[in-house]
Amino acid sequence: VSVGIAFLAGFLAVFSSHLGLFFAALMGALVFAVAHVLIGGGTFLVLHYVNPSRLDGQGLMAFGRVLVSFVMFAPLAAFVAWLGGLYGQWAISWEKNNT
Image 1 (cartoon, helix red, strand yellow):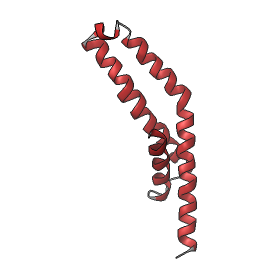
Image 2 (cartoon, one colour):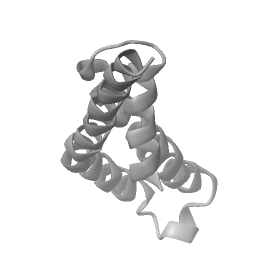
Image 3 (tube, helix red, strand yellow):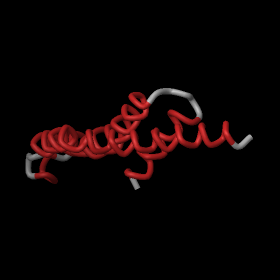
Image 4 (cartoon, one colour):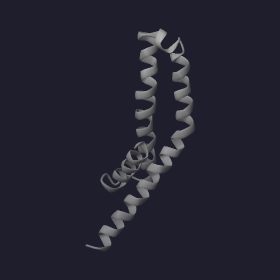
């Protein structure tokens, strides 16, 4: 699901907003940051401070792992969104040529 959302974010950044491919790639990293770091990592942080026994006191360690995996996989999300941006550029050129 996240891959499709990243692709769509890149596509919409180029097709609707007429931004470049760089911004399309940034949209993919942003989508991944919200989904992965804010929601997933934020859950670990909240549980660490609200109910630390539930995670056996390892909430901060789990949040650190989320940050490490974000650094590892953000380029992949950016690449998928960049592909969406390329598709958006193709759609714009196709629309100009066929109208």
